[in-house]
Amino acid sequence: MARVFVLFPCAGPHPNPRRNPALSQVERWRGRGEPASWVSGAIVVGALFLGGCFGAGEAPPAPIVDKALELEAAPAPERWIKIDKTEHRLWLYEGEQVLREYRVVFGRDPYWPKLHEGDRRTPEGEYHIINKYPHPFWSKFMLLDYPNAMNEDVYTWSYAHGLLPGRGASVPGIGGAIGIHGAEDESKNWRGINWTLGCISLFNADVDELYDMVPIGTRVVIQR
Image (tube, rainbow, N blue to C red):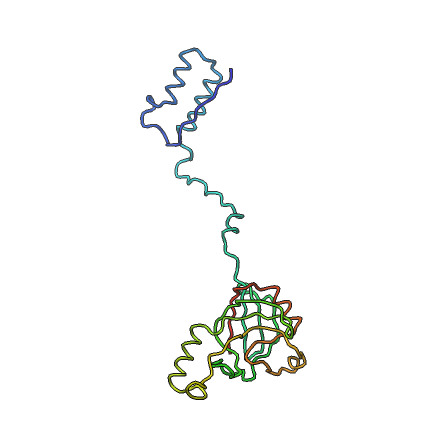
């Protein structure tokens, strides 16, 4: 007859072997004249559990970690853009890895950060792409969130200290509509001419590729 043995929890040797429930159960089976083969087997199995799950001083095995779950839990590296006005380069990063590098040109006054409308400067700082759309002249356009809070603070301070051109109602505003786009006349880009009103211009094939690789919300860092 098949027997099912109940295995008791791993708790090490029982403090009173004569009162150990495992030994008491074996003694009752033996008293009823049960076959010696499985009674002996019960004694052996019971002895293993009475001795505890592990040997003296032996640490339990380390838990098994599912590597797939670890990979799922790890956040994906950020895809972002860095633009250097001195190097005339735009890099697309994924984390710290460079995915693409492009030649770019800027506003006609590329060496100072944008302050107001009409200064033909490219802004500096950290921005984000807030819209994307095809453009009739520049292939693609990726709009940045210029002006940001820092730009507004600088503009307000400059206005208060008379550093903006003009006076009163004729003072220019802070500007806007700054973005990353292609070129109507790519020969200017080939010659490295800074021709925009403050935007960042790529070759059309390059802006088409970049356009498909970055979503709205992508972080853009512009430095000099």
